[in-house]
Length: 256
Image (cartoon, rainbow, N blue to C red; front, top):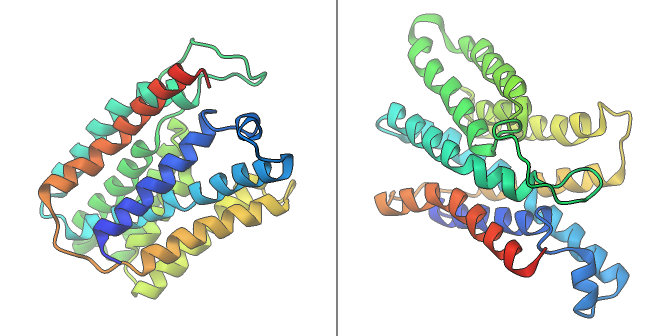
């Protein structure tokens, strides 16, 4: 699988996930379309499963991108600018529903920050490592990764501290197999540990979501870098805020 194909797969998985998370596709709608209760529930669960594949792929791509880019400063700047551009549509689409399910148009931007900020913090930790490693050795990655993870936790970015840890694990100075095993370990901590209040409320759903995330990582493991296309690079950066805006418009039209 080429890098381009992997990016397309991640984008499709993300859009499917956001269709469900934003309430555009929901069980009642699927039942109105003729699905049974069981089939509609399975469809929603399937969308959630597919959605879990996206972030491990993006984390892998960011880690690999940090190693291949000719100018990591510009790489970080692009991530940061598109993260800023995405925040308002992200909040409107995914965080405007309160716990009772009643729509509220009062939002607090940057109270829970979108996933591009997580990718930025992971890439920033790697960039600092690239500068520090010649002087301090490869183990300097650990405190830098912890610092990036702590900042993600404080800022409450999507996937938080473990999201940054996943990116850092994908760049860790080890063999390709070692990187992938490290990422798999972080995913296990994310879906079995953190998501279950550290094993206090561990259910089958947590294992299913982990399986989806590991499937995404498996796709990433099949990736073989291809020749980059400059125009496609900007397309994928723009795809995140663009798809949020489109889904926001769709929900406004259909009244989801």
